[in-house]
Length: 456
Image (cartoon, rainbow, N blue to C red; front, top):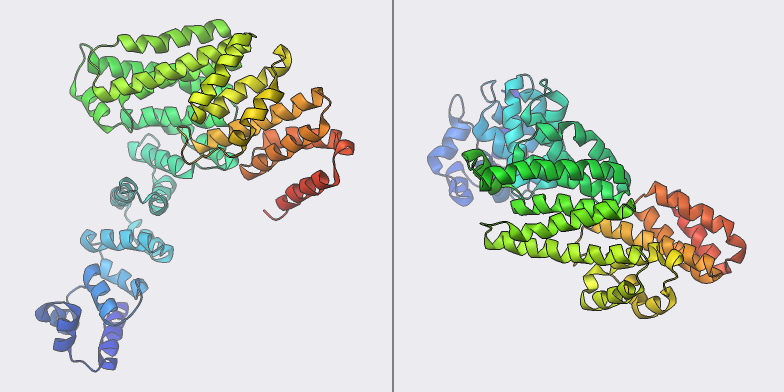
């Protein structure tokens, strides 16, 4: 009890410095006089709740988190963890970024691995309330200490850590995906749908189309099973629960698999299969019994499938589709990155007039707002970077080296920002190949970009 008495001694010293007696301070802090007396004078003293400690700290004029390191013993007052004190203390410590206190409590809790369930539930409470960053330490604890590899709790913890790790850093995204992959099929159905879609999306952003195809196919297969269970003869409680808990409407997962396969097949230049998946997406309109939210999602898939049909025609050299696409960008400026990526990929082969296109859309390309985009920012960075690479190589073909190097440097800056090793290793050799054509300003800009890597 030495640490506990030290905590009470600090409280008593603070009250004395304020020139108050216990009764006056109890009234000042808003703590019932009898409770306050029991906290300080009973034998043994009454344990202090976290709310009471924070009231006392505020009344004494201390910052938030005062005496948290000494409060840990209150959580184990009789040698065992008391959840009514442990749980709020861990959550509050997470909110205040007191990782030192969290680690000390977790270390004591882990003396009994049955406490993993409480640790997991605290992580879930933080995550589902939007405190994702604060939840990470608790899921890491589960991952490091869960002994049963098939545990659903372990799978969900890996899933949460995967979701928390995703951002603009491609290398980090890839590591997170690789660590999560073995646990995706062990998740509850609603998390599994989300996990499959996020894995497909990560690999799309990394231009790893083989992996993206694997997870897109699995998403289509699995979401179809769930969807049919709900809308068909197997309309049981499991299916209803999945529909209620998924992050998006269930039709999103069902349709996203088809939509993703369209892009994969177009990238693979398997245009026949791309057309097949476009037709599968169009067939979503024939599903009966959809609510209004699901119907709105179907309209979005219909929109993107029609756009992919147009891109398919661009890939096949249809000049009319090229001009149709320009009109499409004018009507839907949020689609500019997707549209320009398809056009620039096929510009050289089909001699599309990029000069006139850029005359109209270059400013829109440069100032594209990631924040207001329908697409994830990681995908948008990847698309914009690839567009710049396509333009750089196209202008090389046109013998317009200054324009080529301008776009190359813009793309290189994004590759460094999102740590895209693959694209970095495309941009650097291309610049070095045409360095002799670079202006002094372009060389300086290039050296600043490369030099910045040494500071990371």
